[in-house]
Image (cartoon, rainbow, N blue to C red; front, side, top):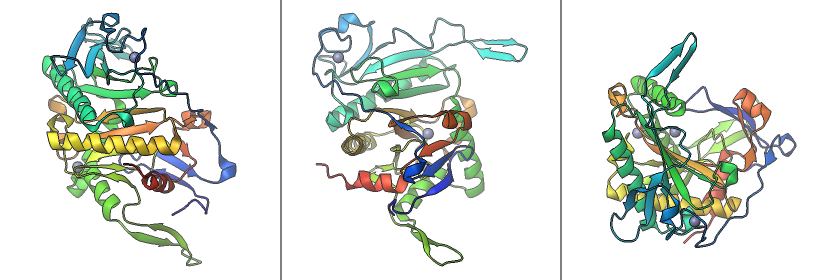
Amino acid sequence: MTDSQPLREIRINPIVPSESVLVATARGSRPRKDEAPAPRDTRAHVATCPFCQGNEHLTPPTIAAFPAAGEWRVRIVENLYPVLGDDRAGGSLVFGLQQAIEGYGRHEVIIDHPQHGTAIHEMSESHLSLLFAAYRTRMRQLYDSNPRLKYVLVFKNFGPAAGASIPHTHSQLIAMPVVPENVHNELEHSRIYFKKHHQCIFCSLIDEALTFEATLYHRDSGEIRRKIHVGQYVVERGEHCIAIKPFASRFEWEVHILPLVHQSDFLAINDDVRDDLARVLRRTMARLDAVIGGAQYNYFLHSQPHGPEHADCGASYHWHLEICPRTSIPTGFELGSGLFVSTISPETAAERLRAVVID
Ligand SMILES: [Zn+2]
Ligand SMILES: [Zn+2]
Ligand SMILES: [Zn+2]
């Protein structure tokens, strides 16, 4: 399908139905201001950058390095300005209607690469696989270190529009005593879907993306309203992982990567899936870079939380990596309504990403 016929519809997120997106592709209905692409810092080494190789004395001490001996390729350090800290007791504070949990947890920085300005799509697949191994190792260590930690969120901010304060390529990790709202909503709704259909909703979405084919007609005129064909939402298909453009994407160029075989906990990922995840991510980021140029983005990993209250979602939840490029600034309408506006249809976005020729 192309955008020749303007589309104006509210799409309900199949996983979290309380989230919806307004797809309005007509030119005149462009309600948002585009985010200007920031010039990317591509220098290999910057003398004053705390994350560059050789400047290790400028950061807090190393928590973990990969590989453990010799020159590091990925390094994890404490965050100088943590949003959560383990100096807190982790108790609850209740005063009338005001309830709070002490800001107990960990906030760490993962330096993705020794070189300053290397973007994800420029890294080798073996390096990206090592980066995912670093995520997994540190997540496991944190879960093992303290049963009060329910969720370890790994995420990346790239570019000032995505909230990155240091240009050197890095990810972050926040271990927290609560399950974040977004993950909680996905967990709850996928649990309900599983009870009804005895299948994981993410697996169903993958099946649909790979095989669904249909033509929708206008009831009165008989005209074709929309054609849905095989792989319409598939951006990149690997041996073990798939990159999909969500049908109801909050961000115009949003792409999700999931393992093809059901798995709820990212910690259970084996080396083959990890290598393929690296490959699919590199190729997806190369596609995004080619289409939107100098993408500023956030990505984050959603996986099964730990703790006994979440032990039953192994069959209903499916880990995934959400990539959210920041190409426009949310407006008051979007913040006030929670209804995100997309001015390109997800089908067209997927088509354009797929069309990029990469090595
Ligand atoms: Zn640097
Ligand atoms: Zn699944
Ligand atoms: Zn998610």
